[in-house]
Length: 535
Ligand code: GLN
Image 1 (tube, rainbow, N blue to C red):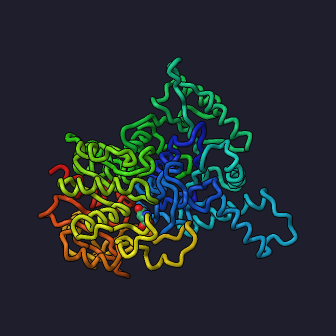
Image 2 (cartoon, rainbow, N blue to C red):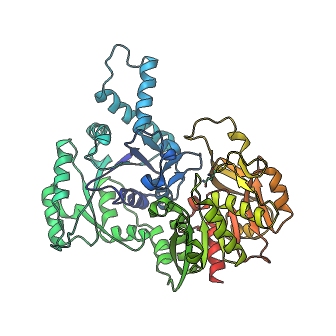
Image 3 (cartoon, protein in one colour):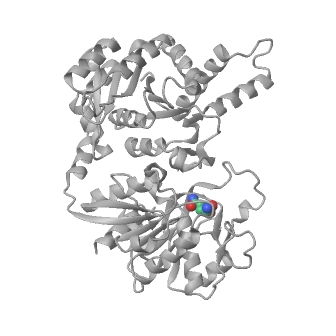
């Protein structure tokens, strides 16, 4: 099949979920075709790896070790495929490419300009990535809103792309937000109308308008948007607020969105089987409520822990329970009181010393009172410190990350491979790594989840600089907190778990199991946590 291009732009505000449209559109093709999403970010960082999750949301890690926007998490969960770091483009990567070309002499004799050189380079790069990834349905999501100065060059590149493509190979979906101000209680279409004329002034003509809003789009609003957007009414779609993002493909299908998109791109239509599977899972009753405390500092923005939140949803659907998350900010002192109201806890990933001692104190309570607990990355490190201090007689136990002078009590120490690293961006131990099995609870969870390879290894993605000090790891092996799995290549502690005779569920991993969780295959360690809570 000739490559088909789907562009997704957005308007009014950021955070309306352009990714929902990208991922859901790709969803309809993903059973038959290779869908390749690319995200065009406007910022000048090379990648989001050094950004604050409160500002940017979670940093998602791909198997190849690339640190990318959290949108990629949604792409992978909706499209059933692994993405590669090359699919994440920032404006800096574009400028760096231009710089390299200029030094090489590719523009010899020319004045290098934004148009045509940068815009042509953007298109060359997009094509190269789609070729490399074998993309058939090539999706491009443009960062921010179409008004942002940061995306001007991307939009111009897309205008040039459209000129060169056949009409049936190109589809532009524009997603906007329709406000319903309380004082008039009426959907207001003006911002959407304005954005279409803004796009038109840039030579872009959306083929489909996707309208986000609190409520379903009314007939009158649809008519108005179609009229001012220069579209037929059946090209205007509505995504109201929904309980679960996984219901959106069905919601779009009911509006015949998939039929329209297949038709516009000249692709023979097929029904989605995946939609039935998802619906079966989603419609199962969720009677019991399980309350999970998520303990740490990026609690002001749910997106900071986006994949953890999603993984808990996957497990809830699988086990037929409603998982309610209580965000517990340990910088405020009453962590333990809040934990008492939860069925189980998660200590997620994190960086820099913020309220670390409060978390360790809370962990003592969790461990001593048999509250099911899962530690993720930093969570594993803190659970180890707590155990060393209170059970294995190392009262001075600390992490070198939070106290540079704590040696020889650096129970958590810098990875050997990190010792000469100077730069902070993109230098952690990143990406997919194998772990070797020791038979215990974690093994049985991965086996039940169908994630054990025939050779007895499992794979998870990592993002860390510190590890359990090998010297102290030896001490652990003789205790009730077992090292269950270690890295295949080096003796790096990757999983720990407490003897089930001592605690119902106290496991942790240096990896990020939340990143590969999806509706069809929930992350085993999250399954174990919620199962223990149900018990
Ligand atoms: N800050 C810790 C480290 O770098 C934990 C990282 C994480 O939680 N992702 O090892």
